Amino acid sequence: MLALNIYTTYYNSNINAHGTAQAKAVIFFILVGTSMAAWYIARVNSLFCKILYFLCVFSMVVPFQMVMFTLSNTADQLKLNTPWTIPVVYLGFGAGLAIFMFVGFVKSIPLEIEEAAAIDGCGPVR
Image (cartoon, rainbow, N blue to C red; front, top):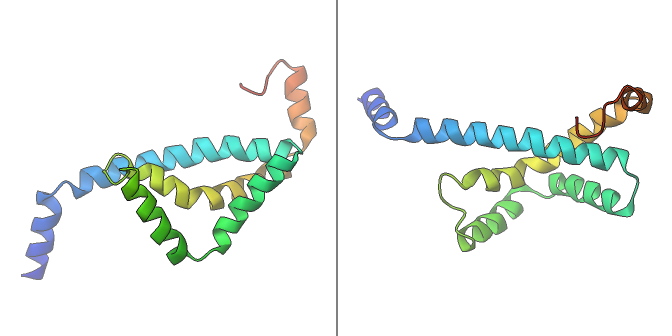
């Protein structure tokens, strides 16, 4: 009987459609947005970049329960609690770790490779 209830609930609701679309949007935003931010943080040596990087690292140090309460209240106040705006909230959770990992990756790439690409005609946008 329990299996029938789970089956009925899952397939008669839109959980599958909304969940898949949200997951795809979150993955896209995290990969594209944080990879570009991480390149900028890794390659530009400024005080702003250092502060931004330490804020991302600090977001991983703070316990999830502290962040969840304030972020859910902020999401309610800004009306970000609809199925199509939830990826914005999830981006707030996942961006710190993603930027930390991407910065480590970009720092491992020798700067000479980017210089050689620039000589060959590749700009920073390409």
